[in-house]
Length: 150
Image: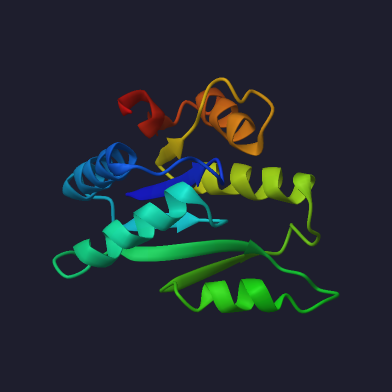
């Protein structure tokens, strides 16, 4: 099972948030999740990567990094980030940076995955995360919003 991990970049981290994410990631792994897919850093990504690092001792879990393929420039930051993942997916259809590229990458991840694990504050209606959640709903994907547990 593949899990797309998409959340607001900046959320106040506390023990409750960390525990809720840890429990949900653990539950997903117990259900058979073996691929966790990421596009950007942020609160949810950081916590998930830490939890998965610990779970990798007992489970065969792959961390997959989805990024745009920039044909006209070298993206040193993305190249560095990608070095922390077991698998990489370069989306050839996303060839530029910006909001449109983020939305396109999120839609591709959601289409490619079975579950969306998100840290989405419903009060933040105008965000890439809100658009991703709306798209996942439209595609009838299973959505686990950790925000509901904190």
